[in-house]
Length: 73
Image (tube, rainbow, N blue to C red):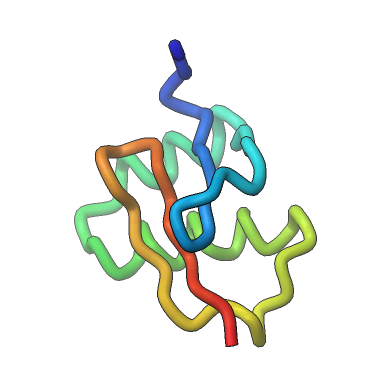
């Protein structure tokens, strides 16, 4: 499966839940940021716009660049 650098595959407990695409502007903000914590916060705030409730995200990690794994309460 080919994905662009703006595409992230969201999985929960190993199951693909959704594919999200971020804008070039957000991608640039992530690329220009040195802090890993800040990159994570930018990406997380963008993903939350897709309807995943903030209260449900307990564990959140980026795997292999495009896979984002999250756990829920």
